Image (cartoon, rainbow, N blue to C red; front, side, top):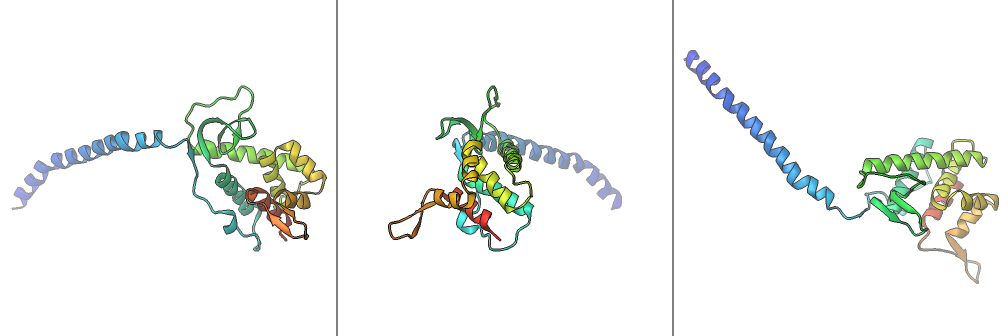
Length: 202
């Protein structure tokens, strides 16, 4: 009986291997036929999931690294993701999460989300370095708020805002005072409100 089972096991073992190969082959074909075309036909603008501004609180104490990634998440949510080069509202050739192309800079398109994220981190780290040049050398919430403004508004505009008093100027960017002296928030300035809350957090 044991000899029979041994022969049976050896007889059908190649068939099991054959089934495994067919399964792997079918999986590869499925990926090539369905997953890859679905990715290539994605819309040009893809908004990655992220917390909306109203869900981000600054009432608690956060570490610098937590605030850093919260800034990146906020930029990703508001910028959206573009796999191909487009012209932004400021007239600049842009790709990914708001990366403005430098003179002579090119990318093999479409870019991936990972490429866009690496570009975003690189751009935001440059904004932090510029914030340090403007006097925000300490790694804290104020430095990150200024870097966020630099990324969004550009070095020149952000420098003027900082010179005129960052917190109040950013508050005016995100809203205005009506005739009765009440502060009215602008509906389209989530970025400035984000920076104001982060900058003034204790």
